[in-house]
Image (tube, rainbow, N blue to C red; front, top):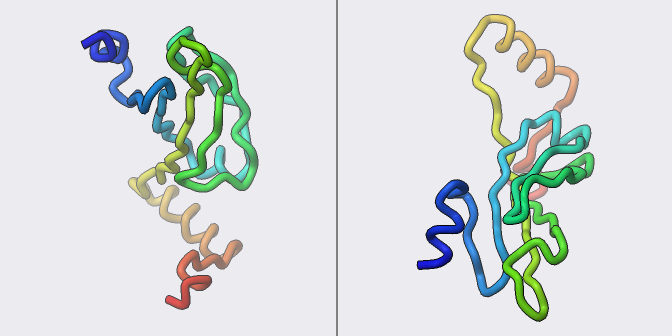
Length: 112
């Protein structure tokens, strides 16, 4: 019951023991280029670095930002890259330019 009250404003949090997990949506350019971003924790927002070249599913740790105790838990940030829609002619054009300039097939290493 205590955890439900603590996490009510942040439904993306979940706990495993004293560790807290948060799925954090980021843009493709934030993942590719790296950035600094505000991340919610139980003690308030902190700024953390998203390393360049990050992929969806990557876990980043904020030491001792989980539930209090001896030892205190950690908070893990799980990155989820969200792709913006190609909802305009210009957006489609940009995606087509990216496809031309950056030939990339994420299935190739798996033989697909």
